[in-house]
Image (cartoon, rainbow, N blue to C red):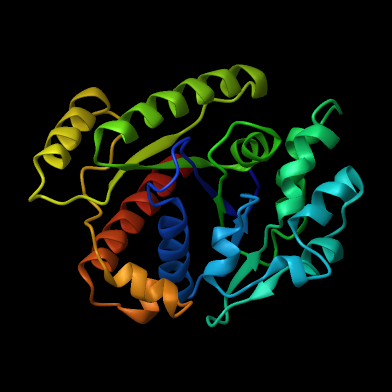
Amino acid sequence: MVIGVVVWTVANHKGGVGKTTTTVTLGGLLAQSGQRVILVDTDPQASLSYYFGVDSEELSSSLYNVFMAGKSVTKEGVLDCLCPTKLDSLFILPATMALATLDRKLGTQGGMGLILRQALDLIRDEFDYAIIDCPPVLGVLMINALAACDRVVIPVQTEFLALKGLDRMMHSMEIMQKSLAKTFAYTIVPTMYDKRVNAATEAYSTLTRTHKESIWVGLIPVDTRFRDASQAQSPPSVYCPKSRGVFAYAKLLSYLQKLETQNER
């Protein structure tokens, strides 16, 4: 938790379930509503960074530099790593392939699970929201993302294998709750739903039955406009604001914001 900034971590152990799309779309909607937003790419594959046309391998500084600075990281050091987007109030803290080496370099050092929370705390006066896009594996990067957040947003594709990924994610969160002495607030988000496919309706039924206390009752549909927005390197809320996918994410955002308001009471 970072005082003054709402932090959401978007995570799942299965790839291809809509983590980056969820991060980008929620971030775009928030920025367009006047909020100051930072999107944090903690995945060495850097899908979030590349989405916005940021080739972090060509940059002089990235999230990797924040981790290597460790507890001595400064506000200026974090701000120097940020990249702008087409929206004035939306910024990226980009990833690089070097992040994949952090478990080997930092895994045995104490306090390394709190670096990202410390970095976000340093820039809390500059932003209203931080959304963290996670890698699909439990390691120092996901640990940092979980330690820093107010809520875990778990996109789950409405198909059988994705349900297995959710089971693994829930197990990892149980492990981390004990390690961090922290209870995670989390919301499961059904994604890539196609009502014409029986497997999708069956998976959604299973989700609502087994996780009814923590699932968002809405659905993110399959929407080819998301792919078009990605090719244009633009948030879907900017590129295709009237698409059904953006409409669904707007409803999700409203739901998440209501949850945060309830938590503040």
